Image 1 (cartoon, helix red, strand yellow):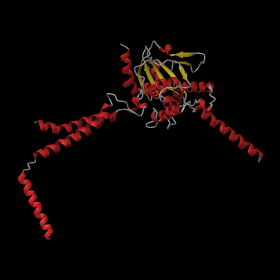
Image 2: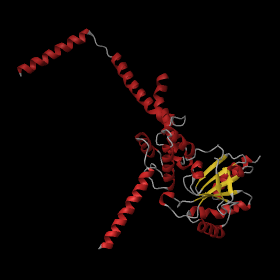
Image 3: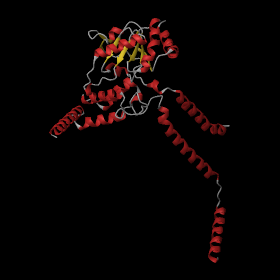
Image 4: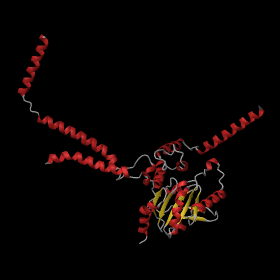
Length: 157
Length: 190
């Protein structure tokens, strides 16, 4: 029994030691750096995987990128500096927010253009249709009479 | 006339959009994974895989067109391409290996045994063919990260001024060589 207790105590000691080791690595100087790190590992995409961020992936390269991001954040690099560093090596693929480039401009502008064109088309057609209608005072009078007639019918029935 | 033309505009937009999206179907998403094309080799100083005393730097590689082949004995595709790469070496292509060690992770206090690795590599090269002029050991994968390597095998074509001309992900086989590397090398040698 004593031996078991000793073993358990030892195990617990070891476990807390390893937990400490992990904490040391992820100990940030200030909350801002911690926040930057957390945002970056979410935003950066694992270059080996089809669709996972580096926080989520177990690929070796994702781990390497995570470590590099950690180092850079510890050095006090800004978020944009880290992102630029990664894009320089892995291309735009590595960042989940695509930049505006000649190749991607279509994707940014197309929805707006379609929306504006669509609305413009509807308004334009409406106005044209409204202009086509010929509505004279006589028509107005006739309508008033018809309404009166139907109202009278309703009352009598 | 004018109105007829206006009616065709949506159709035109639709067709253009179709062409644009259709192209996307045939793009290879893995091709886009490099930011290093057209740049010079990043600076490095790393040991030789077989001889710790010998250290290679980016300056040592200048002066001749070469392939930098990222590989590891743990990677089946790398082993599969060794044979063809050896053929290429016999045809006079200069191939330098960048040994990409996957298992090494200082966080877990790995006892990395370099002698075991050397034996492993030598046996592998003796069995499957040895295409390499020499191998650079990138134990911590720092050069690999600077090159934008995401795994193995990957191969870079570098010109004699150290400029990266091609970055190929995946194995090199006769088809890839003919369609991708041979034309690029031809262009480099007037």
